Amino acid sequence: MTTDSASSDDHSRKVERLVQGVQTSDGAGVRLTRVLTQQLQRRLDPFLMLDAFRNENPEDYIGGFPDHPHRGFETVTYMLAGRMRHHDSAGNQGLLGPGCVQWMTAGSGLIHSELPEQADGLMEGFQLWLNLPARDKMARPYYRDIPSESIPEFVTPQGVRVRVIAGSSHGVAGAVQREHTEPLYLDVHLPAGTQFVQPIPPAHHAFTYTYRGTVLVGGTAVPDRNMAILANDAAGQVVVKADADARLLIVAGQPLNEPIAQHGPFVMNTGEEIQQALRDYRDGLFESAKVQSL
Image (cartoon, rainbow, N blue to C red; front, side, top):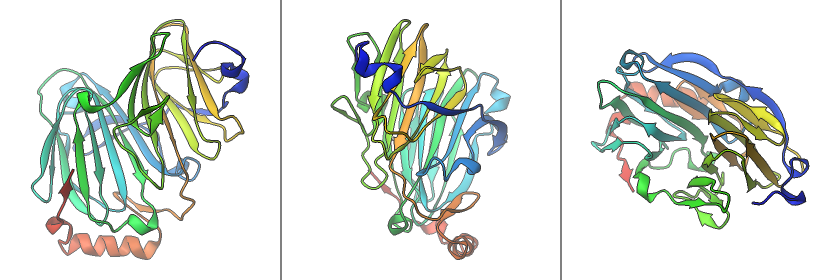
């Protein structure tokens, strides 16, 4: 993690392209930026979607996300600011506050809601969708609320603070591990004049998302609210630098290389499986789902 030839920009994955995302709304009118869209799912397999929200006006978030179904993938909600209450169809509930994560496996299907538990102030965070392999798409649903203090962190000699949500970084195991997709999910805070080097297996798809300031990723400037898709090259690491204080997410994972069929909140492998999901939802099967809390 020092500035030497092994950690120079020449030895980093390069930025293939920058993505600003699409301004949209979801749920009951929550304003957000859809950064990883459906058109990028094959390119960034196993990741299906990334939404970023940063709103200080309550009108932009107060409606939240009322009851809605999911099947066939995982959602990872990471809160930076604000409070969000979760309910699901089995009666489970939890409160996400600053620095907390909820990792939910929709599996065979459930209905849940995410509603703000505040009337004013900043609401900021991310929701990442992670695909499930075909063998696990109809697994029993479950969720895990991870309090901020349970997310492993470390600080480099240069003063870079790294929160390890999933995977591992420099010998620190994250709060969540997944066998088939092997996701890496880091929240990296860089003081001015520092750099951070993260190993990434060459076969894994990877991207970064800057949410404060501007960073240099493999020598390319990536400003606030921009995603950098990292090239699939032989480099086994990404080098991130910051001239001024900055923060970003680093996300990577093992591609599943399976067909993707999506219809709204259902992500399966075939069109027939999507039709079955719609039938099951109409027949009320999601409402009786038993969700395991871990």
